[in-house]
Image (cartoon, rainbow, N blue to C red; front, side):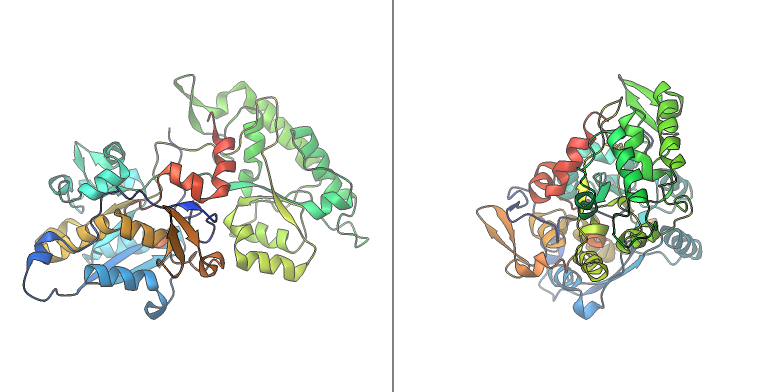
Length: 442
């Protein structure tokens, strides 16, 4: 399966946890203190500055970044974490740094081909000899996961778990009510609602100025592809997937012709945002918030975070966006395919760092820390007693967590795949149940 995994977005437990999220396993390997070597020394532990770069969200200033502060306190580090919101910018900056010999202490590798390239160039540290020291990491992510970052029987990076499906259709419930319609459950009902939103003045302003559907590129029709039995990862018709135990290409499946025919039928109504293939960034989200479209395919976070809820209500206090299950079609009811064998990130250590044993040990400590109970809980839920309380093995969010203040802080610190195991995510994030159901069988 050759589907690319999304990077550092969505499946963030923090800020969207249920009232009784499952706490991390208390029997999880806990390497929550500096290395045994450092702890055994009678000398004061020296604080070491660690330079980490990756793609992710912008960060607050260090004095307001409590995750950094807690990690620094636990590991005697001074984390200098640089993130680039644009994936292209990150790759460019990483290549510049590696070419100039200005190696970060820990960095995200864009993909497996790049991992192979860096290995061939001799840039990455072979982690195989350090696997015993990284036992908490290995136990946390599972030994099998390390095959994703193994080349020639050597481990060159620490993989993260695949990102959970996050995108669904969202629909204006208040527009449905205005037109006396129900949320569509089939592809034909979906088509009828798209047309109605464009033709029947759902916003009541007396103008024909609304579209039924918006999104970004062909990804907008991902659930339609799925409904016809032609799974297309983010709308990519050239998707490879496993079918009946064999690798198949969606493009050459008989269902692809039917799926494209139905998509053309939707577009031909004139009810689809005509700029759908030109929308970049979050332009489709902006159109939805402004009330220019009644259905959008988008990740849940960009509709349900407090800041976006506030924007929606500011534009129209009556706007009521709800999630829509994938419409059923001739091929069933499926949304986006998921690469269960992929990874949402790979973190490598430069080979040059093996010359600095003390700094290298602190990087290993960091990886172990966020894989243990204390560090894993920190990077997902925040500070115990402040952002959450642990009651009877459950994570109970405080008002501070409920306000969603951790969204910007959490994803970038999950360097060792420090996301909850799937069974705990299911308990922690209600949206996961929706994604899981729509992901079955793909």
